[in-house]
Length: 87
Image (cartoon, rainbow, N blue to C red; front, side, top):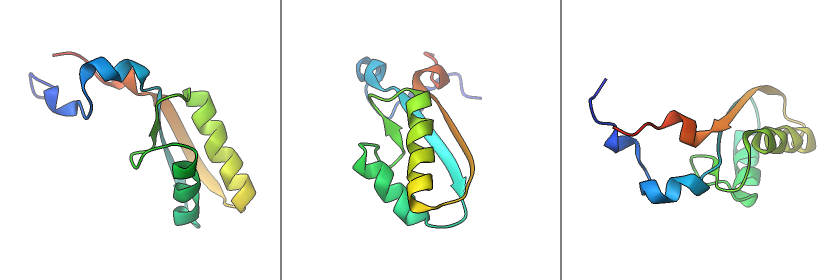
C-alpha cells in the first residue's frame, strides 16, 4: 500500500463531509434500467449520493428493483467517508 492515499480523493477533502453514501449491487437483468432510476434519484455515475444514508441507499435500490421486477442478488451501501483516511 502507498504511503500516501491522496489519489483516493475524487473530490476536495473539504467537500467530503457532505458525501453520505456509496452503493454497489449485483443484478442479472435490467442493469441499465436500475442505473437510470438511481441516476434519476440524484446518484452520480459512481453511485454515491451526497444526502442519503447507507440505509436509504439500500432502500432505494430495493424499491427500484421491486418496481422494475428485478431480482436483486445483493446490495451493499456504506458511508464513503469511512473508507478514506488522511495520509
